[in-house]
Amino acid sequence: MSTNQQFLVGLLEREKSSILDNWVLATNGPQTSAKVRAEATEIFTAFLPALQSNDAQNSGSSAWQALKNVLENLSASRAAQGSTAGNTSAFVLGLKQPVFDALQRALSADSQGLLDAISSVSLHVDGMAQWTVDAYQRTREQLISRQQADLLELSTPVIKLWEGVLAVPMIGTLDSSRTQLVMESLLERIVETESSLAIIDITGVPTVDTLVAQHLLKTVSAIRLMGADCIICGIRPQIAQTIVHLGIDLQSVTTKATLADALSLALKRNGYTVAKTKIGV
Amino acid sequence: MYRIPILRMGRTLLVTIQIDMEDQTAMALQDDLAEQISKTGANGVLIDISALEIVDSFVGRMLAAISGIGQILDATTVVVGMKPAVAITLVELGMSLDGVRTALNVSRGMALLEAASDGDHRVE
Image (cartoon, rainbow over all chains, first blue to last red; front, side):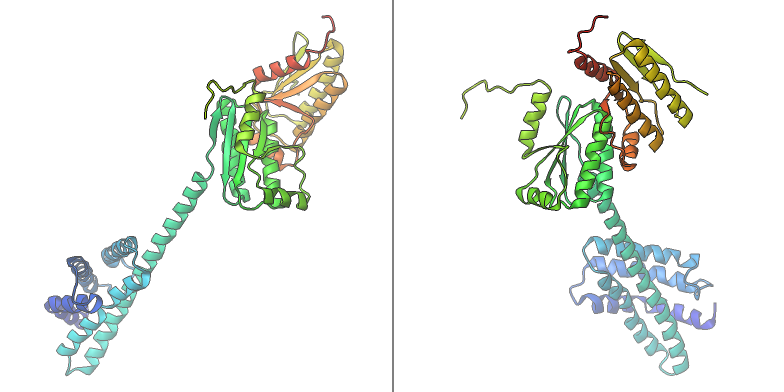
């Protein structure tokens, strides 16, 4: 460790409490919570050993790992509270000014030493701020990819409506990856439950273009190949118009207006009749 | 070359494909089935492909062809037990096998054949 660094670390240790006070005050104003103070203390105490280590110039080394972990935790907890990446990195960058002030007080006579110390501290704090942004972005990306997976899972339930009748309420835009997922889970369930009829409800599908229609027809064909039959229902008036205008041929597919109609057809085909037992309201 | 056995159950012929089909095997099956249908006067053919894992366009075409041959020789042909992956593959290959009757499993297939032969009053 160079003498410059030794001096710097010694100074920071001596001035610790005043630096922390100024840092917290500068970033959060007078009404600071104990939590912010604790966060600042944690970062500062991790920063000193990292600075003290032999390879202080090499911020990718293991000596900085502890500090990195602290910063990643800070970033994750800030992100969970809804704070932006900019706020978090501004908080870390807020460490600079109090340290510069302390250095200025100690080194007012030695301008070259002051310059060296300031540039060294500045370099490290900038690196720290960058990590928090990186960590923040990583956390967000994980969140997004998890939500995407959740959405894919949630949007394709296969429901057993009756003995031998399955239903899939499709919600959202149909693209090839979703159709594939729906097709696979539906076919698996057909084998599992030995259902002879599948109802696909497209009430929740906002638009039907030629591609979506092609996906639907593929699903219907696959269901037929398995030995089951398929009814498509929930086609809204506008969508019916679109389908006809696009010239999509749905002649080979049984279609019904609503899920109720589809279910009553399914019951009829399976030999059930629904009878009212009471003169109801 | 492996020849797929054709079993006779009453007036129905039963074929169970237990191996991954080669083109030769498929051709031989097609020949044998045509021969057997006309020899036994069968009115139903049931092809169980529940053990078939891999299909290509040739096997798909073979299934369609057997169905067509059966129809000409007056035997209802039903393909049963297709795996989901196989169904998806065939659809992706653009083969929806429109003329082929399908059923979920052997018992459903037999029921379908019985229903189809109900109107048939030929004496055994």
